[in-house]
Image (cartoon, rainbow, N blue to C red; front, side):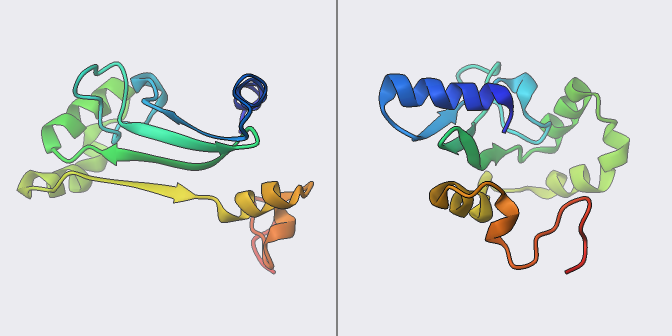
Length: 133
């Protein structure tokens, strides 16, 4: 979580008396090329983050499912579509609208228990400085 997300969490807790909240429709500029823009306002995306005690615990979005839109959005985001040709080509044969999200279980446990370090929630934590048990 960024310092701004933590500030926002403090603000929400103070003004809305909750430590659990959802932020949806992130700006288009803030999300990756494969995130679906909102149909009613393409400045925003069909995406969300779930926060607990000022920390993001889950992030998700609807994914782009057409090759043409993927190619356009690669260009918008400065990604060379040629580098993703195999990925983009897969959508030329048809893909259903789809979405997903990922939850950080260790982060949830750490926040729930009030631990000072998320590594304490995992038997074998991994990070850039520790790759083996």
